[in-house]
Length: 196
Image (cartoon, rainbow, N blue to C red; front, side, top):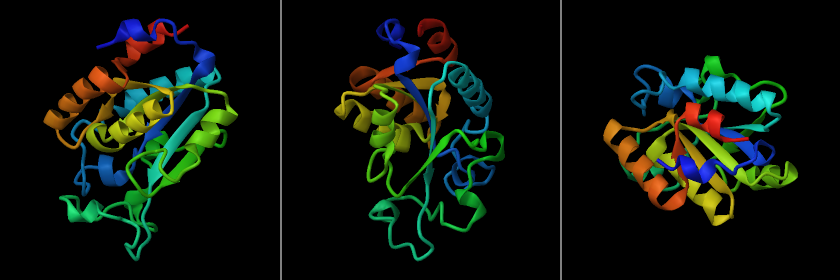
């Protein structure tokens, strides 16, 4: 893991993004239940509190699809079941992480938090070039958002104990790949200790 790469990062250049912590990924028995998803909530809450103390903007992504299912694209062609349909309980962000009034919810139709959303506008509005990423799923939306961040010269930092994948094996493999070629992977504790 790449703790040395984040030692020069300044808090005032960071934003925290909480990816898709929704019932359809986190609740017990969810259509795409991410192993360990409920266990990372405490780490995310800790990072959110730390981010607020340090005046970081807090962003959430919320995957949401129309009930007519016309905006899934190719998602359902793969192995994924229907999920995050508007008007269902599954689309809601888990109660423990309910967004507050001073936080920003970014609705998205695809994997990346950047694709056809206003995330880039918000990052620019707050003059941020470091994106701290937590949430689900490590191997899908976390990965896609980290990849799109680095393509925009935004430094992605993925918190290893703040993300969960669609399987333990894919979670671990994608953390290794993110750390190898996309961004930095660190624990919440190391992140808090290292950023000044």
